[in-house]
Amino acid sequence: MSSFVSDPRDFYQVQNPPPGTAIEPTELEISQGFAKGPNPDPLPKLFQPLKVRGLLAKNRIWLSPMCMYSAQDGFATDFHLSHYSQFAMRGAGLVMVEATGVLPEGRISPNCLGIWKDDHIDGLRRIVNHMHKYGTIAAIQIGHGGRKGSTIPLQLYGTRDSMRSTVEEGGWPDNVYGPSAIAYDDLHNMPKEMTIDQIDIVRQAFIDGARRADQAGFDVIEIHSAHGYLMFEFLSPLSNHRTDNYGGSFENRTRLLLEIVRGIREILPQNKPLFVRISSTDWVEGGWTGDDTVNLSKLLLDAGVDFIDCSSAGNDPRQKIPLSPGYQVQFAERVKKEVPGMLSGAVGLITTSELAGKVVEDGSADAVFLGREFLRNPSYVYSAAHEMGINIKWNNQYERGRQKTKYSFV
Image 1 (spheres, rainbow, N blue to C red):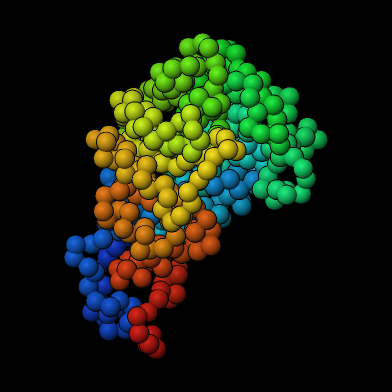
Image 2: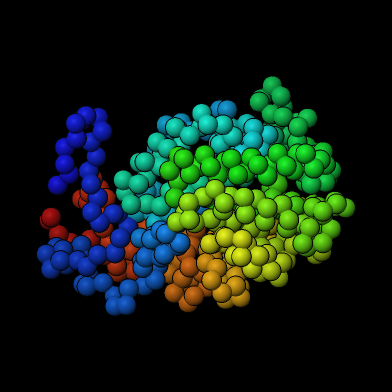
């Protein structure tokens, strides 16, 4: 029974254990059809806890960061509160807030979230506090759009012959920059090549953004170094043609990311994990490769990163992606097996409980990130558990919606 609080407006139901936690069904629950029988022994890894530095995730089904294009001046709104809370309420082990700009010009679109000023902290803290009520790990992805910044939000895709957002729409077409003056394609802005002073500013902005995320209460911070945004633009030889200490060799192209990681690790509490999302390959000849990802992961482990979130592509329109269910699992598997001590996550066309369970069970990854499938089915954790014959805790308020395995009047 939840205790009453001094201010009724602060009341909430205590969830014990948190939704999404595997629990043994009672004989009554079995007789009433809520469970087929005792949970499998051993319990499938998908619903086993996972320790990440000082945290314990209740399961390994996690929400992938996805841009929602629902902010003005970077501020979180009631939309973000309700959006992220729905997954926490329904048992996701970790919920990752979308790519959040460390600078105003670091946003992907004018409608993306931001974390470049202290005023952003309170709105984000409100989301974190609510997720914590359901025992969910609250994570945030911080990033910089680089040469793919100042673009239109998703709802405008296909309505014009360009991806560029104008000044009148809140864009910054004259302040788009990247490692080199190479546009992603003709539909995007032509970036300016960054000066060393700008690199210094961006490095500090990531560190400051991580500090604000920590102050907002986030349990995990992920650096966005994927999909052709600024950090990955530095990594890939296709987008980085610099001739100074930040371009050319593998060591130079990875320098900025490693400097940011070390800077963030210094200011983060030791019990808080640090993740990095990487495009594991460009899928273009002469670009970033899976071997590069493994080699970088070794350096990131030494620098204090706990988890590699393995995605791919997004940096070059010539990419040839072999789309199929779980097509990116191979990269998470390589990191997990070739970089001892580093945890990895698989993402990309993982939709069924069968595939999600297999990826974790056979040791290809430590957790799975779901994106679009969670948008289609916010109760994915509940559905997956039911399909796998696993009894898990539902949130108290939704208990009467729990699926039954046979007909019952209860």
